[in-house]
Length: 259
Image (cartoon, rainbow, N blue to C red; front, side, top):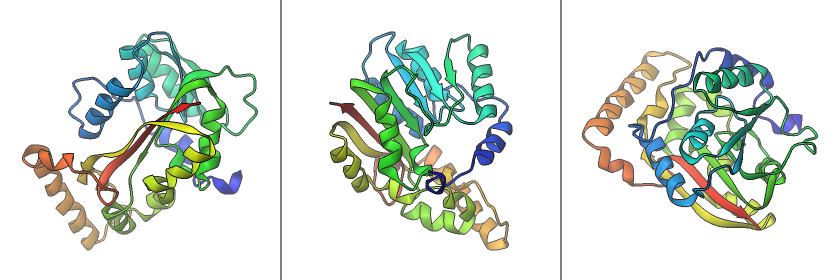
């Protein structure tokens, strides 16, 4: 599986080491993508306390904490980053919430783990070149009739063009094929998943272009342009965020039932 990964463990250790603490996701969030995600969660996920939920690639655990706080789910997480697990544990302690964390590789032997009512990942499966294989690892941890929740950022279309210029290294750590909704039909059929919800959401999000790896004059100019666009989309053109497409939407989300 080593060649299937688009990132190394050191990448995630360094990333989580730079993060001091995550910001809590609240129901009154102003973040457009998160706002839409929360509406979908409220509509399609079961409102039943004490259901067990597992986040794969759990660090930093913001959405897991949200589910524990607002849905009453019993939170579990698995992540192979030791630093990520430590930061997640600290964050849950500060929030005064219990959590069970497995500092394990998802491709290791997990037969001693329980099976869960809900398994999810947000921004994880796109870091692997074999989409079916990584989705299968999620399904293996699910109870029969359990809920599978998958979310990925969308770097296709406009974002691919911009990020290829501003942040090619970041783009290289993502499998763009995992961001094409048509490709999800492969694992849906292969594993007999019942689709509950599947769509692009969040509209065009110029905030995705903050990173600039090569600060040439042209790149800085492009970055400044999208910074101005971001202000317009936040203050005056928010209605445009309701239009979605593979070519410009910020996120792709799917919710399934294991049958």
